[in-house]
Length: 122
Image (cartoon, rainbow, N blue to C red; front, side):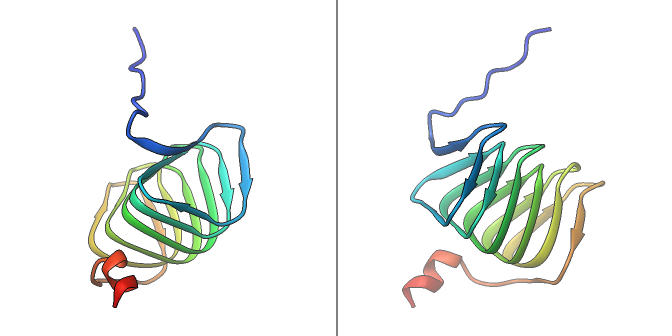
């Protein structure tokens, strides 16, 4: 059976398996993480954390999040946050829409808020 190729044409930042990044990241578009990131993230588009990907951060701001990997943070702020069955999260979530698949592990507080990027402009 052939594996479906991933389409990264609309992705502005891709961190592959085996790659480790330390430092704060700001992305105007979307980002895909298959490796590991240690630092604050501000992703205006969609942040996808693939299975095996890991983020350790104090603060993460996203337009949308799809998490199949592991996230350890104090605060995650976004419009829509989706945790797949393999996703793991520890921290506080502030988002409009939260989607959690059966099997995902979430530890922390959850609250509804306004769009993260409109908050920055206020």
